[in-house]
Amino acid sequence: MLSTTKKRNTCKVLEIRRLTPETAVVRFERHGLEFEPGQYIRVGLEGDPEIRDYSVYSGSDKDYLEVLVRRVEDGLVSKQLCDLEIGDEVSVGGPYGHFKLTEEALTKPLLLIATGTGISPFHSYSESHEGLNFRLIHGTARADENYEADYYGDAYFHCVSREDGGDFKGRVTDYLKAQEIDPETNAFLCGNCDMIYEAFDLLQDKGLPTAQIHTEVYF
Image 1 (cartoon, rainbow, N blue to C red):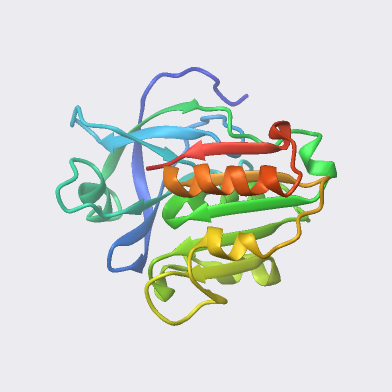
Image 2 (image 1 turned 60 degrees about the horizontal axis):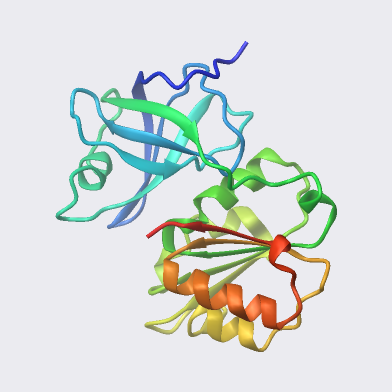
């Protein structure tokens, strides 16, 4: 049986996928940690008191854990995680959080809206629920920040704000302003707080009840 305790585990790094010069997916041992898609864990280097929260990127049925990390040069954890090598050890605790798909949401149109590495919980949603019916709108500054977008197929829509590329030139909220939203939609917003506040108001103005708008502020 998988463990539900919140003790910290020492986990070996199994794989590093470097997606851009600033971002990487770090895969490490799971050691029976049970979580629901959308929850986060606390990760740091083994023996280092500094830890940070990261949404689980991998599906709940995998025998490993993955997190998507963006390097912050003056950060106390992200830079070190991005520089890890296979066989290095990390300290992992959790899970925490309530940004989870409800049974009701799974039966209705699903709109996932992310900026940057806020796409992480949505990757876990889609890996955990086979055949999940969703549309994912992802906003980034640069075109190369479409983290493993091929995985989502036609469900993925990329808004790029600072250069050409992607499916739309501009911010996620610029794109949303011109969209019609099915009133049955359940929307999940994850990323920077400015996007979340603006998108929340836009979705309400388009007729979505507050109970159908779920948020997770990432940065």
